[in-house]
Length: 339
Image (cartoon, rainbow, N blue to C red; front, side, top):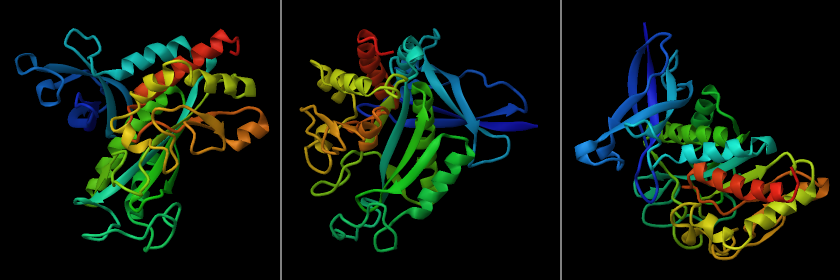
């Protein structure tokens, strides 16, 4: 007897990496071995030294194939078994392990847009739908497009055992969101990548595509983000720690250091309009969706909780955004003695 293992990895395409995958047939009960691939075809190696290594780091049931089949997320290594330069997971693991005692957790809101051919799902051929207003969390065929794909994706994620915590229709027609978390930094990033792969794979069966483009339609239409909710043990116990984290994200060069790593095309989305702060300005505030970082009203009321960094693009690398937030906030909390 055998089972199918779908090996999934992040390639070296710039400025935004792509997901790749291929299938390995293994004997029932076998451990997941390291495997290889042609890095010259994924922007990860030259043709004269093309071999790269796939190291399994996370697996879950494959909801597409069913049975005993698995989805297997892999880190990419060089043939000397060191992390490949495109391997951002390895950098996150190092930082996350340094601050384990602070118990950082994340919830990431993944926005995306369905396309049918060259137009967003729900956009009429050669024109535009009604202006934004009724689409967000809407209902009815005049305002909602792609719900069948969304529901299938949700079921696939749940069957896979991923930490999906919700879905909703977003502000632009054909635009949706799912949330992953709360989970530890490495867990939330691993599971978000698998959920993205399942999104693309599920959409295949409905003959539509899903994009993480942060500004899929120019003009008076909302972009697509990956709002990143974050807390530590101290933040979940003290409002002072919430303020320390917010202040740390705005210190010195930190705002630009973060923004330049929050996804390609961020200046197209962070304009100061459509519920965003300008990309080159930093601010935080309670219940303010026009701020860089929002403190939910319930957090202020309770005097503890979490913060939401609203700047990351839909196409952000979750390994990068979680690493930057853990490093910046946990370092500041440690210095302040708020651990």
